[in-house]
Length: 106
Image: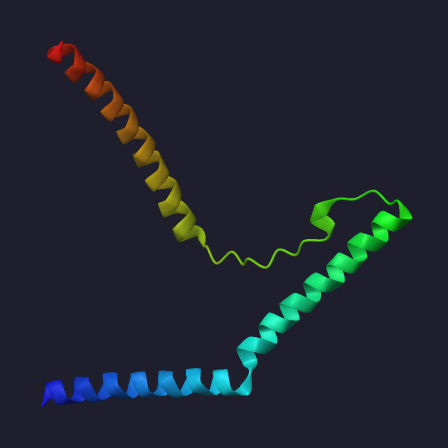
């Protein structure tokens, strides 16, 4: 009985996900977002070309949009820092260990 409920839930979740993806595709939402990004790029190119013609000082960062979003929080930043420190420590131990092992082999 429990397996039937799990199967039914998984099937319904996939079905609704498919319906959602189908509606997004048919309404053109994805294509609209791609077109909007392309238009922004064209606008930035026109602005860049106009600044070149005027002889203004050019900084590429003025024409590029940063669309990446930082979703990290204190927990992810902390775990990343701990992981990097562990990685550095292990790297040092392995290098030293292989140097000692190399001396034994020679």
